[in-house]
Image (cartoon, rainbow, N blue to C red; front, top):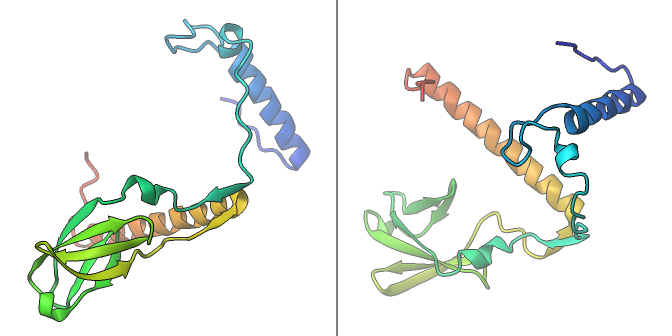
Length: 168
């Protein structure tokens, strides 16, 4: 296997272009639609992709979970967790089962004990408003890095305690 180690941006471009040429026009592809032929021989004309938006609403996902209910047992310290975020309710609710109902328009949880409403809590991590696609991409990359760092820390802790089993 030939390994390319480009020394500058121009070499990176040249090697990438050569790879794309081989990958798309010369390399047989085993996908059903390609029938062991190179992709660009099978699909010479590719569809035009839509233009990327300049601005995005970062919290559009909330609309998809509007009215979703998260059931939790309140800890002794009066807290519950949702998606690794801790929310304080009240020590008076310790040991009780509660429901957190998503209210998308207000980006909050409506806390209920049984059918009785208790309080409203702002959902943590909501970005609110419109932002550029570049800014949104950077926020998502940072969030992915943070989650990977947490995952690796938990894996290290579990490995240290003999609780990590790498076999699936």
